[in-house]
Amino acid sequence: MNVTTMYCSGCDHEVAVVVTDGAATDAQANVTGEELACLEVGTSCTGTLCPIGAAEPSAMVHRLIRHGLPTDQLTRVRGYCDGCGLDTELALVGENRASCLVCGTTRPWAVLL
Ligand SMILES: [Zn+2]
Image (tube, rainbow, N blue to C red):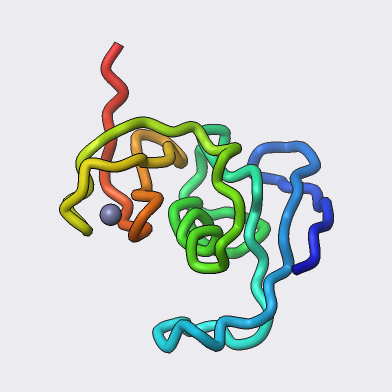
């Protein structure tokens, strides 16, 4: 695992990214070889496409989970995931979306104030 920093044009600052070693354990990955996972994905990612990973912010969270990378830095909420059927922790990503930290399922999420 290789941590580096990279300028993100999506959130307009330098972010910590991890260069992972391939996706050999994920037969569904349509990317072979290494891929980038942003460690600072979260609520500041307002776009639908992360310029670093060429993927949706929610896909970035999925990569963090899949590669066993830390997710402590993400903004978390407790909620019900209909992907795995658990009351669990969800990470807020992008605008009004949250990704399950257990299975990576992303669903719409309204923050009610
Ligand atoms: Zn889940």
